[in-house]
Length: 269
Image (cartoon, rainbow, N blue to C red):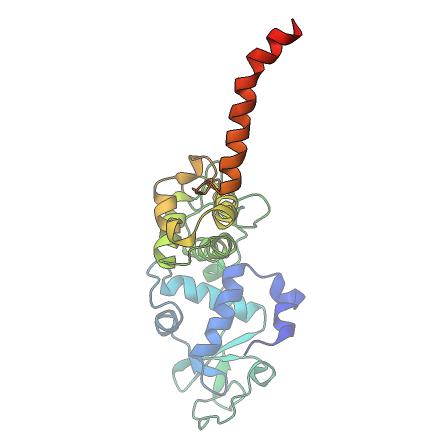
């Protein structure tokens, strides 16, 4: 469970988003005592198993950044490298912790590893904005943005794109095939700013909700794939209604009135 003060920490807020995300994922890698083997390949495989663009070298740089921030300790003991989350018990308190078997930083034969600054090149980099005010790098999305293709930047973009999409998706009445819709959204965001695309989705989603039965509303992925934001907004169709007796009587009276008009004009003349 994430503590509230983590989200409001000024120190954590000063880190790039990818570092914050990795910091929390790292808690799932370490054992119940906040320790684990310091092998970037193992850490990458555990935290980012489905992200080939995030390499062990990138993870190593992030670990050094967290070490520099004094929230992770990297040390060696008995010829093996280990890492430990500093002040672990302030972050997590497992109800039934496993046996503590890994050496700790303060053990007699443990030696803290020296900070390796060159590995922090990507970890400490502040990337350009994806869109105005988003605080993200372009990474090939939208138009007119600085291109940045580092793995760290790509993670940051993915996270923010997901947030933008979630806001837009909440306005779409037909909740179906969400994964396919996000993939279409991601692809379309390479041709136009994602916040602009999201605004179109919200505008049309609200219009569909107000005018169209859900079964006639297109799936969002299909709508994006066909660039339907260039269409006119949907409007409510006039329902087909059988004339009532009152409608028929009114029509008859109106027809009599029209028939009387020429005679009335002759009398007045």
